[in-house]
Image (cartoon, rainbow, N blue to C red; front, side):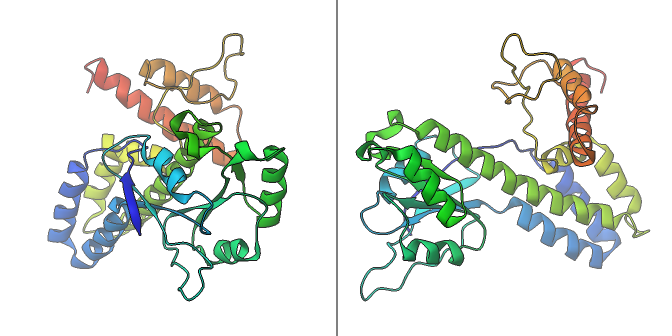
Length: 287
């Protein structure tokens, strides 16, 4: 791979409490420690995003606009070799997220690439400014591939058409990876509460700040206050805004969501509500 960059697109915590828990578990139950250490390694592993596609589609340009989003850690972007090059082996797709770049309707090799990817795949219709109806080509291409397909003019740089929506979608997919990893770690921790030798330590961690934040990340919700457009009724679902706002207002928002979503949404909103309440308590000097 070539052209690597990095992007820290999500929230994290310092992990000191988790490391202290690992040490305590190691002293009490070697088997539980092996299980926990393996889960932590997966959760802390960097997230890899591969930008791939045929020769000439603009892989480097798409990589550049994604890497230019900034950040210093957590997510690495890399460009693969081109697909369908005579005499060459097609690249291995091993990333947590694969961005497949097109510059027109999909070809047979693009379908092969989609099938070869082990995880999330996002299609990008690059050079959209050279097409008469890029939106239609993106829709039909996405349907053919069975993927979301975003039109973008990456060659124009960060100001190119479709760059901001592309970055937003990629951020969302990265957040999904973070949420899945957090959920897997949370599942291991909850399972360890069945081991008498470490139950008290694990339950204490889950009830403390870091454990509450882990639950919020596992719920797949960004730790930011949603900013609704003026005039939207209270409790309306809206995009999360930046920067973080008043934690008490955020807690109230997620409490309102408890009445609006299904069972999965209620669990997610409750986890987020608890996390913001903890933030407010720390801010108010109550913890």
